[in-house]
Image 1 (cartoon, rainbow, N blue to C red):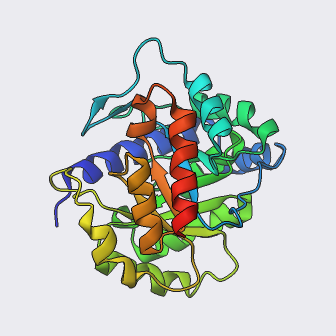
Image 2: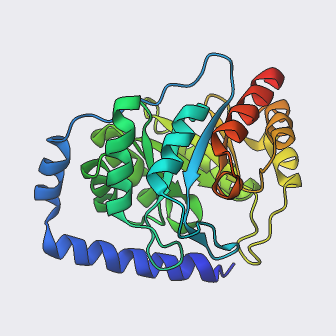
Length: 273
């Protein structure tokens, strides 16, 4: 299946990694990363439902999400007040207006609050995992649709060496099956398994996939519902389906009181989990 967005992002990501490696070899980057203080640990809430809140300035499907008046640091502070498990930060520059510099700034802000930052990008090279660690991140997104099995294992093992968690993202039943096979070889790694309900060909959201594919998740790994969740009722719904976490971005970016919306979503989810 041809997926133009992912194909384009993979090419751009590989070019960024190559340019960065030319500036700083992997050996030097790894040494610099391991010299940084360890990031906050990812600690799931005992009441059974958590939210990864996202700082996303723009997306190809929704366009601009942040007004000129929005301060990403204030947004991250609001997420911490609202109880976010972690804060996802886009670092892809072309379609999402993200940057490693913003990720590092938010990681430094949130570290004293014990909230880890996750690098969300279209990563294709373990070098980029070490970039995340060097910038203070506590986790990275790894997209199954972009990588073959050997590359996925390499990325997860690099994250484990760097002390980072991984959100391993699937889009359909076949990728959930593939994730289960790969994770059986990666015991002891800190992995969340996510299902993104966005159709990669049309960029449309099909939330019914959360229910239809829930039984396809392998046992033993925390499950994450991604995309299309905007309300307190949405959080209660996916928690009731058995999801352990949700990743919420656009709704929080566009809400006048993101801390209150986040707290409400968490309360509703925990009441149903």
